Image 1 (spheres, rainbow, N blue to C red):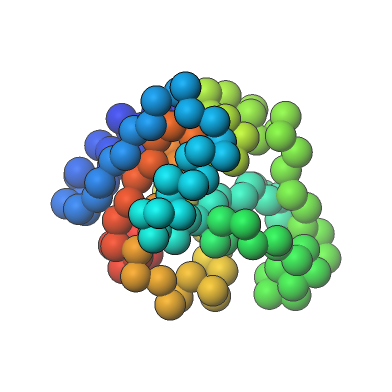
Image 2 (spheres, rainbow, N blue to C red; image 1 turned 120 degrees about the horizontal axis):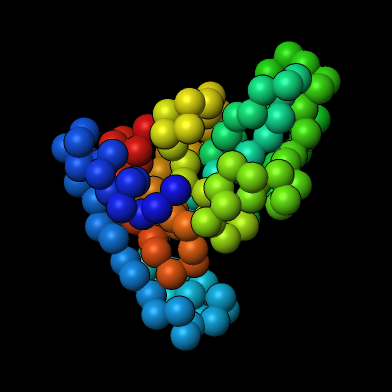
Length: 141
């Protein structure tokens, strides 16, 4: 999914956002340093399979997801993370870890981690580690 598609979606809903584009010459460590200076809370979309259905779990970047807690919350023991190859089948043009956090763009359910409820702002990558979108968490939610 391209950043243009995500921007068109946000624009169609009159969502205010900022796009930050980093040069591809930056290393991931440099990008991590820049983002920490922004003071922005990054979120990450993690693809999971629940029973036989694909869903997106949205978590704060760097939070380790406890599969047992996710299973308890969903009331099933049949939940697994998608492998990078499986994620690539849904998002062939996206770097692993940069799936856009909008389930409605791919017609799937989205589950938000409770830790996100206190956030003022959300930022996430789209397609690559060079494109970052920032917006209010209320608008994201």
